[in-house]
Image 1 (cartoon, rainbow, N blue to C red):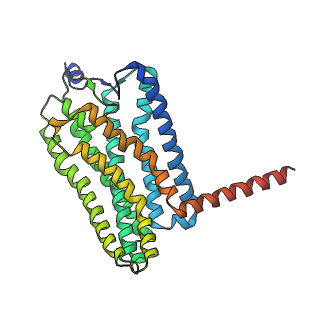
Image 2 (tube, helix red, strand yellow):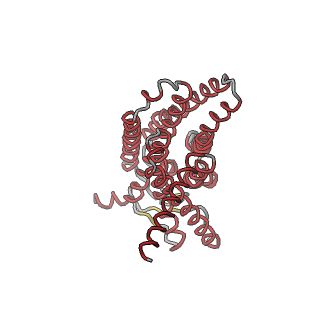
Image 3 (cartoon, one colour):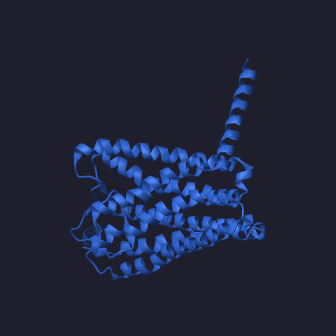
Length: 322
């Protein structure tokens, strides 16, 4: 009897995906496979360039960027491979346990990215507004502590919401109108008392996301105030350029995430919200390497140094073989 009750309240789910039209599945598969490969290649390249270049690795901004790129790789790998498998095979089932695991890691990586974007904004604030104290305030130890706290708080947040979700019952509601096990559609589908999950999502989740976003906003307001007082036009341009890449990513991430998650559950729309979710789960992580590399002279220089090392290594190898 207990086993039957468990199966009733915790059924396997069906991930309906981005489209219910079979003729669109091949196009979606190719599109998201290309986006995923671009994301993996670009972010892994950023990690390699920063970790192999001492000049970048010891700079707090690039230290945070390497962790952000790692999170982006994990973030998309939590959802996209399963979606590609479903599109390729036509099998859309996902076990309840696997669904909870996917939701846990999705929440953990999303909140980690949220905190890392805040840390990067704080780093820019320190560098521009407190340049004389910057080497003391942003020592390697402080940077490692900030990253550790970001990962710790994110996993505690994900664990709390996953445990609460696992205690809900879903009755006859088995179809998830999404391409992965997202928190919001699952709460909407639940047929048991979900007031605690909703309340914690609004207050605790809001404090983490909105609070961090306000920190970023205040940091950039202060940065703009300081930069506008710089007498040199070239100095102002250089200061703004160091922030432009990060500010672009912040706008893409929070613009879509806040629009999806911070509104009443009664207004949830599967089709509309799936499009917004694709923006910050697929498109933004894929664009990050282009945003940071194309607008960043340090990353371009690191790439040239890496290519020179590779070219020299190949020449030495050819010399030895000949």
